[in-house]
Amino acid sequence: MALALPIWFEIGSLVVLTLILVADLLIVYKRPHVPSMKEASLWVGFYVVLALVFALLMLIFGGAEHAGQFLAGWLTEYSLSIDNLFVFVIIMARFSVPRKYQQEVLMVGIIIALVLRGIFILLGAQLIENFSWIFYIFGAFLLYTAVHQAIAKEDEAADKENRLIGFLRRHMNVSNDFDGAKVRTVIDGKKFFTPMLIVFIAIGTTDLIFALDSIPAIFGITQSPFIVFTANVFALMGLRQLYFLLGGLLERLEYLKYGIAFILFFIGVKLVFHAMHTNELPFINGGQGIEWAPEIDTWTSLAVIIASMAVATIASLIKANRDARRRGHTLAEEIRPVESE
Image 1: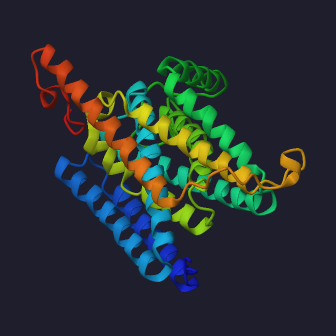
Image 2: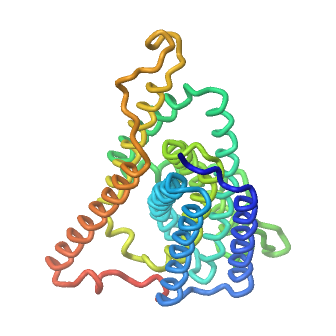
């Protein structure tokens, strides 16, 4: 049986994580720049090691079950966050955001994501506590999302985004050019919003959509709001540096979306089974739990998540490398580093 996590551990963890995020924000604000591959690699490695150390502390103070839930939740949210990066790349390219200020844009996006996910975590925890049948809805939503993830085309998202941008431009005075990282500027004595505001809105709406996907997914792994929130924080920390580290490789990971879709489908099935096992709806099996419905344990979930991401990533790299060789290049030569102008 898993030990209850000490309250001092939960409070202390949240305080330390807040301080790290504030320090990261100050670094970006005071020294806007494009990080080198080495710098980005070190930061990503630091945050990954930090997450593993946190899992170890959770193992010591809360037991193997809590540690396993955190690792499975963190990896799930991390994979969904990488999917989020694909959209960030599209947004940055579409608005031609100067690379010097892309770190600030990403940091704002991460803060918006944390706030939205925090709100959804609180709402989700309350719904689960009071309405156990919500797992049916969460499961069905993830199954739908998984299928949509696998078959959706980028053009659909682009059309929706273009409609939003068109609406904003029609109803707001938006300048054609950026003015550093400012959202307001003055041209010939008249005040204008800069394209940076639309970039922030585009990223914010993207974060909202991804929060709707990710929160039900992690609640399929653990019902602990603390583990859900810390897994999200660790997944989002280092996301900014990961953007610069992966660079042009992101668009080469063709099969990654199928790996993520499979993870969402798997967790959706797990949620439906859990809802059936703890069923309280009177019109299903007379309000009694369905005994034959299996309960998928945390370690099975962890193994499926790792295997799905590994297979999708390796298959993508093999295909990208084969395609590059057909064009007479290597994959490394075709990937344009993000920090190059």
